[in-house]
Image (cartoon, rainbow, N blue to C red; front, side, top):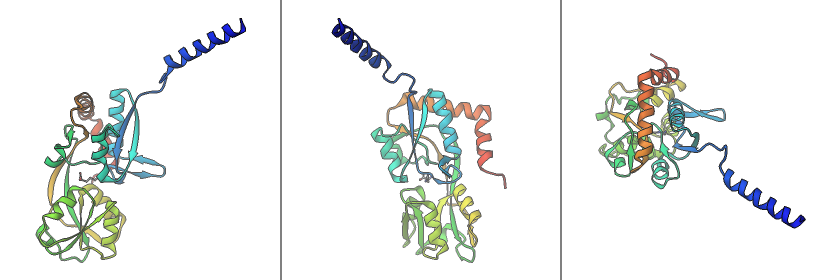
Amino acid sequence: MKKVVSVLLTVLMTGTLLVCTGCGAKKQLVMATNAEFPPYEYHEGENIVGIDVEIAQAIADEVGAELVIEDMAFDSILTAVQSGKADMGIAGLTITEDRLQNVDFSNSYAIATQVIIVNQDSAIDDPDDLGGKTIGVQLGTTGDIYAEDIEDATIERYNKGFEAVQALLQNKVDAVIIDNEPAKVFVEQNEGIRIVDKEFTVEEYAIAVKKGNSDLLEKVNKAIEKLQESGKLQEIVDKYIKAE
Ligand code: ARG
């Protein structure tokens, strides 16, 4: 009898365990990012915060999932999305033809420009002045791609945008090509550097998902649309970007 009871118990417990696998645990939505890009994603104490993080949270709510943030090197983000290691790449990612070969992009949620940061006393005042110069960029960004087209330029690639700015402060590079909003943050936080008035290019930020993942893409677009129509997106932007 004792044996029967214990076998019964075991069967019952195993059954319960099987049924309850994943019980209560919300499904996860993994966001790949590179939190070196204020105000879109950056570290604040132990947390990763920013415009993209709040957008990602809204998408997770739409999907009914728990948001998990994976912070990685910028040039690993698209691979993580392609391999399924992450569900979506949200990192101030510019839509480009090349990237569209490897991932699908959502509708755009922000317009950005590439700008040039130089030392206060620099003679560089236009993208055309960059020929032959040493240019600092974050590895794998569109700034990196544009720098490649500049005649006779030497490109110094850094893992973080801010490292390129530090190189500029130390006169190791003549200029940094980077997105306008992080540029504003870095210039504000450091004496002696300025943003060149003439911009490089205009770009659109969007969210990357694995090619063919139309189910998630649809939910991402729906979340973006809701954020835009309710005015919530503007609220998020205003929270992180103070009007000049
Ligand atoms: N917009 C640029 C690009 O897509 C730079 C993005 C950098 N983002 C980041 N989180 N570090 O290449």
